[in-house]
Amino acid sequence: MTALSRGARALFLLGAAVFFGLPLLWLLLAPTRTADDLTTGSPLGFGSLGNVGDAWSHLTSYNDGQITLWIGNSIIYAAASVAISLLLCVPAGYALAKHDFAGRRALLTLSIVTMILPPAALVLPLYLEMSALDLTGTVWSVILPLSFYPFGVYLAFLHFQANLPDSLLDAGRVDGASELRLFWSVAVPLARPAIALIAFFGFVRCWTDFFLPFVMLSDDRTFTLQLGLMSLLQSTGAVNNSSGFADLDIHQPEAALAGLVACAPLLIGFVLAQRFLRTGLLAGAEKG
Amino acid sequence: MKTLTTPRPPAAAAPAPVTPRRRRRPARRAAVWILVGPYTVFLVVFGLAPAGYALWTSFVDNGSFTGGHDWVTVLEDYRLGDAAANVATYLLLWLPILLLTVLSLAFTLHARPGRTTSALQLVYYLPGAVTGSAAALLWLFMVSPDSSPFSPLLKLLDVHSATEALSGGSVIAVLTVMGVAVHAGGWIVVLYGALNALPKDVLEAAQVDGASAWRTMWHIKLPMVRTYVAFVLISSFASGSQVFVEPSVLSTGAPGQISPTWSVNQLAYTYATQDGDFGKAAALSLAMLAVGVLAAWIVITRTRMYATDSSDSR
Image 1 (cartoon, rainbow over the protein chains, first blue to last red):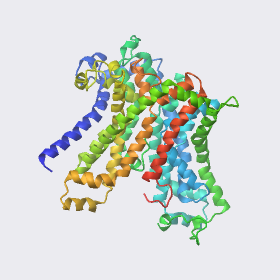
Image 2: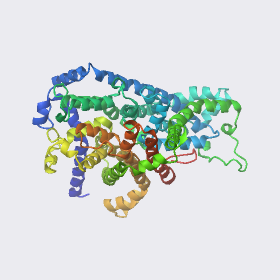
Image 3: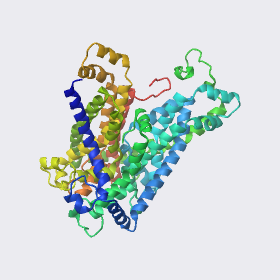
Image 4: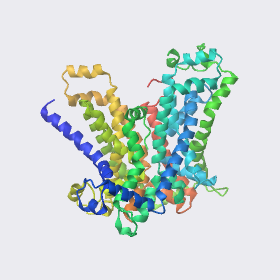
């Protein structure tokens, strides 16, 4: 490789890093600055940590601390959906990988179709169904559909198929263990990393989901953080001052801080679990 | 494991190999249904039933058959043409740029893997953590010349305010940039992984034969990962055609600039909530669902990216 092409390569990779990284860097820095500084100062200055505290106290005083309610909701919905989806996915993936039964092929194919299908494609049909059942507006209209997680089944299926030898199960059978006991005492303990991976991706999906709760929920006390962020933008004009409400203490730094809080769990997760992430993506990443 | 790689024998084929796991006993069958039963219920209730119920709703109103009336009125709605044109334009702009970004970065990274490779992949991937309303919020700031770190670029493009950046056709440009920033990273990781898994001897043979880095990429690596490229393209087409969140949230930052029925899914949402017309909402969302299912079907049957049976090797 010539020096010229090496330079061009480095320049290209760095240019891309600027495009992808700069917005995030800005988002990290913005809450440390004041609204005035954000519009007049240099785009990437650092203010002070005190400003972050101020921005946070302005945020929490918005509608009597509604933001903490939204954070709590997001955590509850995600935790409940992930817990239920694990209870469903892990046994199903195990049975699909280790047992032959009538309808196995159909179940696997349907799971893969619904997994590749963009989640948004089913949201409105789900809304119609939930309206018919009179469940719209309840937490169940969000938690239950999110608990159906075919990608988790597929990950569990791949894991058990590749990593759990039949001989191990057969040995257990010879010792007289029942099928359920084999699943619980042999398969599950060996699958802990895979279960953690499914939980991680399931959490990412629930935490970032917007369309489903947006359609199902109307009372802002039941909102997730993602929805709350939108209603915050709508009612304060933090980004675009033309919509009035300038008397509220929600300006650019507060909005940026709220946005940062909304994606902080994922940013931290992505940095800490890089190897994990790669495994999941390569297993045929589900794209939102 | 021998039993893992043995293809499942067809039911009526010559003597089936007798392995313990193929013998069916009532106790085992009960256990299997305890294991898959709950998930199957969820698959039916939240995967299949919504589609079936939507089909019913689009043809039946208050117990009487409406004979496709809803489908016709949807097709005649002038807003559908506009929405479909918006989505098509967005896809035509976004898909090639996304693919080019993903391919060029994955190949450039793979041409000379080094210590910075995984750090760069992380930087490219991280914007994937900022999705939905947080992404819209962030990009509203990015197109506001007052606060954006890209303000010199915005001045060059003659953009004076966020409202201006989101008016008329330029909203598609903003959506495209957002879409590339959010989605490219994940695909770069996938494609880089695929490149890493290519047989080393083939690439070495090319090097020995004196193929340039460019020729190796164009004539050897690219053909070998073409199913991945097709996978990226079809999946992105499927998710892009459903676009809903980004235009709805962006419109809160610049009121009046983006139509509430900008995309097809937004129109279906308007039918369901604003108009309260479930029949039309059902018809239109079913049409969009069909697009998604078709794309999923192509991925499964053509790219063979997913193992549908334990005998398929991945």
